[in-house]
Image (cartoon, rainbow over all chains, first blue to last red; front, top):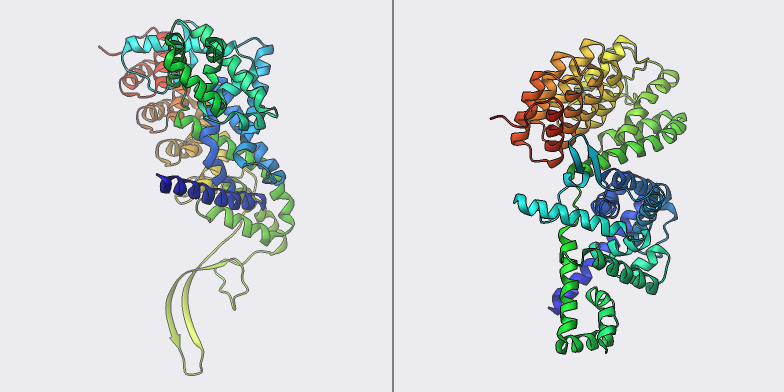
Length: 205
Length: 312
């Protein structure tokens, strides 16, 4: 057990050294290294944007904007935090901007009215554990729309903290660092977000 | 610890975000308080529900994002490439490295631009090498040896080497020049270099009114192994979506292409001009399509055409 932990810690240390080498190569203008860096993180960036914004079009915009900012500003990265934190700070800032703009335009629903009746755009995207049973699918859709509505009731910051803690598994201290706030403030956000979710989803869980 | 304090701490306790001594106190309380245990159960159930509702971006969305990013970086880079064009051989080295170094995808379009720019500068600075001329010595920068045929030493200490050489020529011209178009059509079939193919198809896609160019685009849509090239070729066929041959190819693409992004684009083009054959293609597709979004697009299109969503 102890050996496993030591092995994992040493693997992380090696990965960090390798990543630093890759980042330095990107800073020297190595395009191959940039592609390597993008591919190491882009799936989790897209997943974060998709879950935060619940819109594939917006997630696509965030993906592009985030990696272009990395490309333009990588020379300013000074290794005083992890690259992951730096990148996620960029991504969450862009997502927060999107969420705030959306708040101004009033919360957008993923459900759009069509000639065939209401269609949920997010039905086109697989959810973890989606079941083939039609009854189960109906239930999932119902639950999905309630979850969307619960998420819509959170402030952009609460939503971001909740997403980063619940889905991305980041510690509140790191989340505070990413959002330029304290761990305590992130803790309060998470608490409020959970309480609001429980009020909206209370009868379903 | 009171029930009120434990209830308030449960969300943070769930995420492992309370101090170790508070954690011990909560656990102790939960063991002895059924009401708070129920609250704890609700928290776990909420989290499990949210876990099941996590969205996973489909692979084709990731592929499209990567493609868009490569294009955006190419657009950012292009001015820099043009700036460095005052050194043609440096530019050539860069272009060569970009186009032939395996694994570099972000730079391939920039490499293609560099080679086109090189054509202009090479013509100005180096002049033209006469076709078929053999070189004396190794100062010729644009000659490449493809194979050595024989090596024959003589008595004087010299050696005679017979070799086949290939010569790189750089040609530049306007896009409406027939010869340039022919070269671009050949480049669009360049098997080993998807970067060259995607750039060539990009340049040809606005010239689909020529039957020959349209033939190249149709060939790329059907046979090119790279989805980026196929998508570009589909863009070029947009204005000819009512043409019978194009429609036949689009139907084939829709039923056979492995890439969902390509299939989505093919649907868009097909349903822009509806006919009986489209109905049958869409009905066949619904039966075999795995992608929810594409199935929904087909169903909507069929309903708009007053056709049934399945064959019975």
